Image (tube, rainbow over all chains, first blue to last red; front, side, top):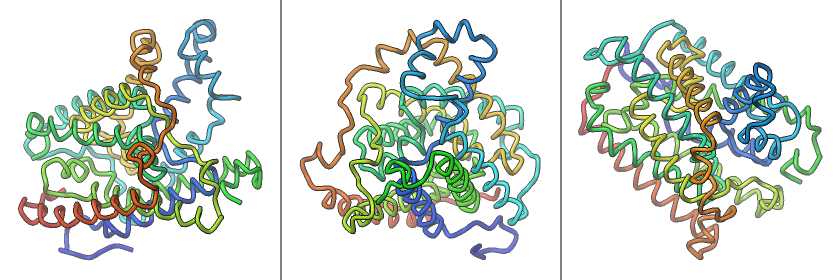
Amino acid sequence: METTKEPGRTRYMNPYLGGVLLGIVLLAANFISGRGLGASGAIKSVVVATTQSVAPGYAAKTKYFKEYHEEHSGSPMKNWLVFQMLGVLVGGFASGALAGRLKFRVEHSPKITSRRRLVFALLGGIFFGIGSQLGRGCTSGSALSGMAVLSFGGIITMMALFGGAYALAYFFRKNWI
Amino acid sequence: MGPLAVNDIISSNTNFFLAFVIGIGFGFVLEQSGFSSSRKLAGLFYGYDMVVLKVFFTGGVTAMLGLLFFSLFGWVDLNMVYVNPTFLTSAIVGGLVMGVGFIMGGFCPGTSFCGAAIGKLDAMVFIVGLFIGVYFFAFGYPMFETMYKSANMGSPKISTMLDISDGVFALILVIVALGMFYVSEWVEKKFPQKEY
């Protein structure tokens, strides 16, 4: 399952084998459920569900939540992507356990502090959260799944996403290299 | 025949259960490929590790070819498979904003859950950020709504937009992907590998 290169290095699967397996998972999602993979949609479900339980009055008269219910039937948590993301946590944990990678830690370049890494992780998450709503899906839901079904919008979003990150890579280089 | 859930061959509850199983496969493959590591993911933007490009495009091409062949064999009706809609303005702006998030945070939503699953605290903080971002969008929706809904083009396929068949586009994408894999292998040799 794992490629052995230099000893002592964290060993990961061959990326092309990983890609083929990822493609099979995505194909299975389309064949079984008629839809692709996703991640940000599950976060949206949790946002809708929590807002409705904490502030039902606000949710009932606010447009975003009303539009959500025009597009989705039933409880926001009884959602395909919510079940899929619970699976992602299980699958990721299982893989990390098998590979001996389970450990609480902040991963960062030796040139920056943990604190700086966490601040940028938080800011990055905020941007990604907003962007995923505008893009109607994230790297999984819009870019990857969109590519598999030849969605024009998905491919445009993919190019903008990677293009945007490349365009700014120079300014954030200290965090990574 | 397929998609099974859309054709009522499997029940809604079975579909949810299989979503969970598919998620396990998704998470397992992402973690095995190293997508639980932000430094490995960010390597794409500095050339020291091109794993994202390799896995992403191999995955996309595999699924795309699989769907086209399944359709050819009559195993799946592509008209019943969801095609992401295109709202051109928000597709571009949303993609760019996600690009900012990617280079700052080092994760995307799916990979951050993988990282969190193996104990990466930076991934957990990224997820907190994701929630803040989505709440902000939800509560500030009137601010975004015009852009969010502008330039609605329906759900066109890129092959239709380019006026070529799905198969020809697939062939072009395969060739482009192979070219990028070749360049990736070359780039990785040029830039020093990082230890993480």
